[in-house]
Length: 229
Image (cartoon, rainbow, N blue to C red; front, top):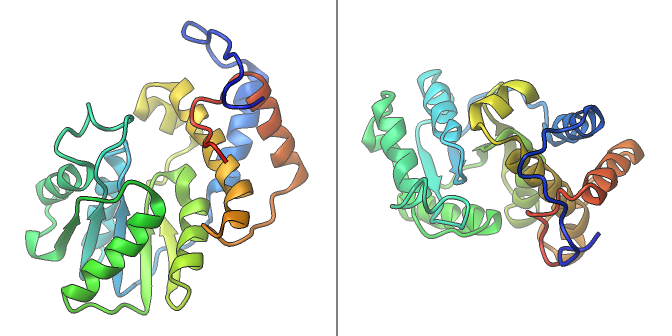
């Protein structure tokens, strides 16, 4: 199904058992499974999910990095939730959780993951940081694509990923909109598949069962976050 194809009316539909299983399979694939370890800097990637800032505060408290960049402007998904921009709201949330303002840099312009990486790298350099290792903190299902983006655009640094340690079920409950989450999980898998050819990310192996689950979810109408590629 293409992005312009008719989308079934799912406003009042819960996920079927099969759709749940397929989405959970994609969820597991998106997780990189990196063990958090000390890095020279962290980047909190902007999104609709304030859990990114929560996780950044936890990992800062664990002493894993001396500085974090919160990066992100707005998107149609976030403008109502974070009217002053994703990075600004993330900073306020992290400060409220005990992260000192002196340990936070705010990059308020990025509109996609590639810009999150490149603009954060520039901001870190201006602040005197030239990290050899970076911890990317993002939504759980954005780990794989974020990692692949950083490896393509910033290959000289050691990149690791972190996110809130939530199960698929718990994450759905935390967001409160299962259709939105599944749409985004599907959209991220599409980007993992399509973006290497465009030079946006490195190539990654996608197992056949993950591809098949993705195709079933697309056919079922979970296409609202697919990119025009």
